[in-house]
Image 1 (cartoon, helix red, strand yellow):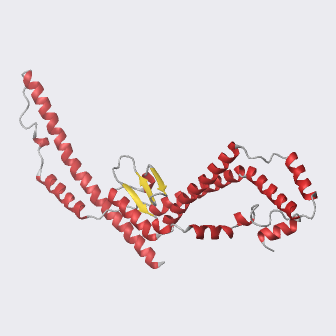
Image 2 (tube, rainbow, N blue to C red):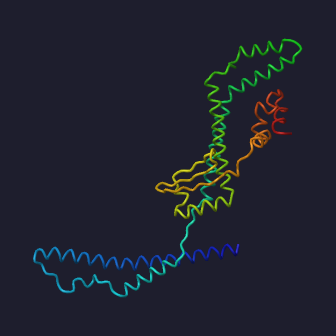
Image 3 (cartoon, helix red, strand yellow):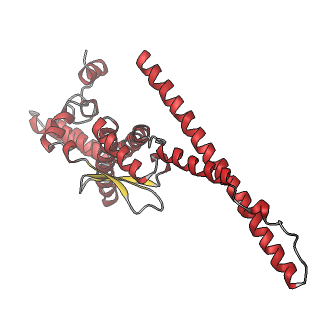
Length: 280
């Protein structure tokens, strides 16, 4: 805590010193500008009156002369300012934290949309479950029950339902990739430092950025600024997971265990069903 306090005091002192140097530069250069302005006005006035035969008094330009003390004050201010240290924080950590949360919210929305689109496919799952029961039954009563269910419910898959389902699933893939990329950067000190350094060299902050996006085909997360020919590009190749690992992780996820394919969905006793889904 003491070390942080000392560092904070040092930064404050440095900021105050730099502010004084900048103030001196503003004041000394303004003094010369004021003198310069007077000289221009004097010339303009003398020239206009000269055309009309109006004679300016001797010494009218004297206030427009740059005096030695003004010259010295300005030159010293420039030298002091040149040797001062100025810095700023591009705030990559805050930016990527915010972007990762927004991306996770988007992922949640796309998963909800997928669940809605999966309603028609859940009907197919129910038909399949009942058909397996009928297949294993000693007589045709289960098959008759399945016929009654099919007659009473809309279990056919139309083109629109299939398209909606496929589109929703692909949207989840894209949203998950984007959310993962932002989350990876937000928790990777090396990538954050690289992002800060790149923005610092461009003299921009991340809060000033125009857009950012992740291209899974190239594995690059890009942040762009309006009016900047350069962009910050972060390579995320090291964060890609093997398909088998993703599916294995998915088989242990609550999203899977509580789904129609998690092995618990069709248990009739609600208490047993919840115990199966969520554990005892």
